[in-house]
Image (cartoon, rainbow over all chains, first blue to last red; front, side, top):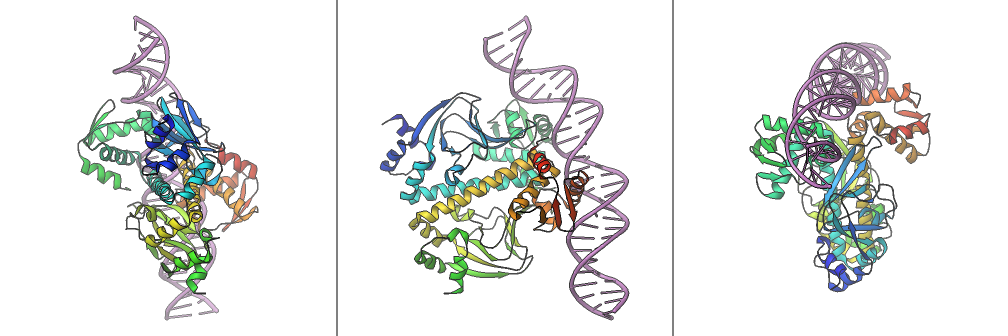
Length: 225
Length: 225
DNA sequence: CGGCTGATTGAATCAGATCAACTGCTGTGG
DNA sequence: CCACAGCAGTTGATCTGATTCAATCAGCCG
């Protein structure tokens, strides 16, 4: 089994794909190693490939000329991203950068569409993936325009809690990156954490956060005021 | 030709679909009349159908308990929406309401997936549609978190200008709705319009806006500060 | 032991939301 | 036909959450 094949087999999107199809994907696949901080592509560049993470972590973001950045997604092992230009043949709508040393596969737009035509189940998987991402964006848009920072933070912590299935959370990103994801800056995030701590909803130390009052957090996260 | 078939034939997504498939869609299609202000579905409800606009106009939005609303999309004749739950079998991520008296078709989730399995080209069309919507959301998220209201407004006006292909724009929505789309409130939109007017970039009267300095508008819209 | 990066804290400023009053338009009913 | 209710939009005054700027601190690596 080639390294490429093994890498493709680990991608969630390709679960259950017949081996023959996986092998035809190998032909249009490239393994790629990147170091922390390395940029994969930038918003506006023509999008010829999409990517999947074999190991490591990648963030997808948009930046303003001022330097401020808004994180749209963070992808870890098994997840794919930058599918959008595959179906439109246009540019990447956002930029991508490695948050850790990572191994990625890049898959060429053109060949992938052919596989999709032959594999309706894969196509349905792609549609489900895109739909899930739309759902997440809807939530993110609503949070950005309807809620204040402590409320967004509460929502984020609850998400983490669900993912890690414990009240003793480990922040999966540096705080500056979490701030960028929440649409704010590190100073404001710091103050929001303090505020939640003062209210007795959480306790923090370093990149550890303990959820004390999940009930109240949920109430905050729901509240539009 | 039944009324349903005629309605389906007018939907962009179904362009080029073989007549046989269109007819199989008719079986799972319902024509629906709604009046201004009528709600089609609300965020959180189980999503069993998706919709397309035959005539009229529909807005998709999220609301905060405070009453403030963020518009995500406005759909007109030929456009379909609420596809997300089709592929996830979950709830609607947002609410939908008629902005005008409208005629819609609703198509059942289940049967539609079967047609997708048989029609790879339709499936590719759906993927392209979802991708386009993701791209738009990425832009919207970036605007909300990275730009101030006059900058977002400039971007919106340029979009209108491109769509209407003239400098003498007609606002397609009441100003209050435009405010909700831009993630703000009518008072702030009013002041933003005044600001652009004072700077000599536009002239306004009622729901008419004349673009005076498109160059400067574009520069503003790009600027993150 | 420096020196860097990430994080925190404080003070000043600002954009936008809120609250309230007012205008103008439209459509309805006396 | 006019009066008035009602809604959309505007304008002004105030308030507040967030950003900005600046200084300090903690941890980590060389």
